[in-house]
Length: 111
Image (cartoon, rainbow, N blue to C red; front, side, top):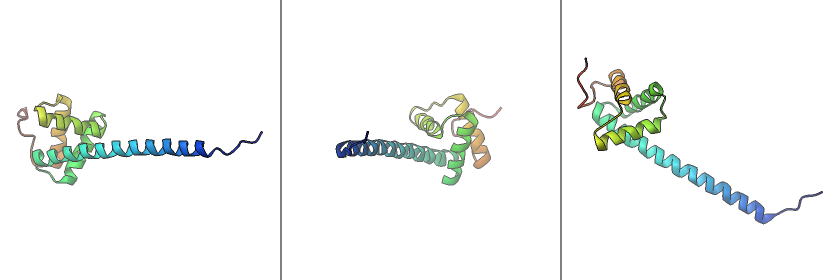
């Protein structure tokens, strides 16, 4: 049994593919913005370079097993609310110790 060519079906499939691709691109742009904003906070708070801020975020993500974008979101939430989960704060401080000259302002003194 031969299949007939269905131009409407091909067009519909292509539209669905393009819509999915647009959704993925929108999510990527949003994720990139969140990470960039968090990097800016790390640069300002930790007095590190943007390259060092990127390394800090990657380290925190790897040591906490939390996706980098989610780490970035937590850092941004801290910037707005002034609070951060203790494990994220500790990893952030450790990473800044490895990459930067200072600890996070307002962090509890080291023991």
